Image 1 (cartoon, rainbow, N blue to C red):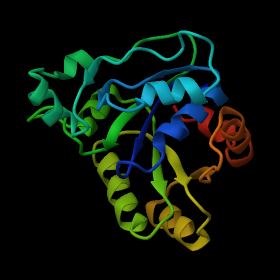
Image 2 (image 1 turned 60 degrees about the vertical axis):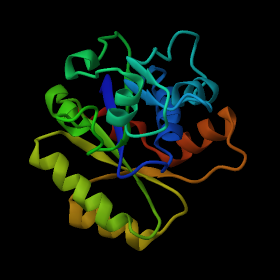
Image 3 (image 1 turned 30 degrees about the vertical axis):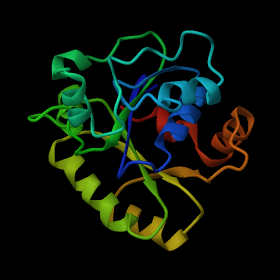
Image 4 (image 1 turned 135 degrees about the vertical axis):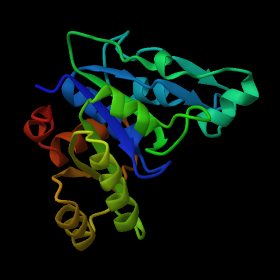
Length: 211
């Protein structure tokens, strides 16, 4: 089984934290977000703790907690903090670990390094979250090309939003990538509705065979 999975997105605010919570719950694993930017509202780790239904201690503390809701490189500069790639060594655990990046692949952690550079060093399998709305074909195909140019293993695409069958088909065909499933926008969004949607929308066997 895949024991370490990176969840990234084509953009920010597409729902990958909700997907990460659902995936960690589905795998009965751990969750780790290396860098959190913005502390005034519920953090991503707090959201996962609320939604994933994991035992206490399964949501690991961030390596960096930054105050401003900005790109990590700028938020760190404002806080007077230096984020180095060496700070983001992933924990090795006996059970599955879901690692969530911040924003999209090209988001920088400092003036020299982006998240995609970290992922290339890790060589862990990636799930790319993509919205189903207008504009997603371009963003998603560019993200797929960027991952493959760096030989980062891509498990497949997790679509988030209402079903748009032709868009999903176009991305999977042009990108030569698997569609792992689709997570609809959930109202209400609760631990129970998320777990039900993950079981209904995703085949664990497709995800578990990623590395």
